[in-house]
Image (cartoon, rainbow, N blue to C red; front, side, top):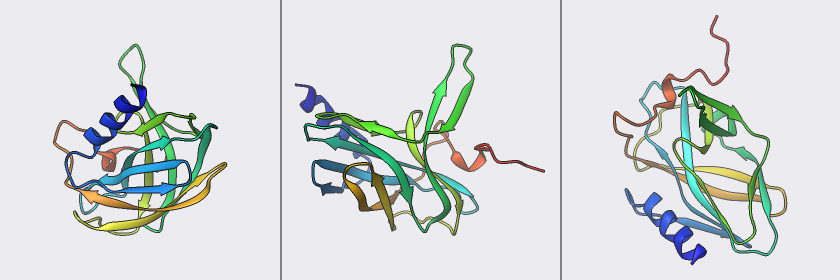
Length: 163
């Protein structure tokens, strides 16, 4: 039942566009995508579901992509006072037999220092680096821009100094 729920969740994440997936050993990466940021944006968020069908946990420990000067895994949280924070995390555990969703308002890939505009429909190569599975080549699909009520990474500071 747990796997069925995880699979249904992953399908819902991919609903806006045609989903794509990558299988690497026990890991399945479902619909890596980036909502199209504004043409002048310097940052963008990347989302996907990662399913681990294996009997051992793995950890996502890095991301590399030519679309940005720096790519990291971040976590967004809102505290009891309604204050939102976004922080870089060193590793994201993908539990054995589990699914981790990288989605708006939670874990996500943060692309900082975009090297150019991202156009809806484009595919951009990236490498996810796992502790056990090693490097996994994927492609992020640029999906339609998010609605007005959703998070716009192009206006966020992400810990950089603005002098």
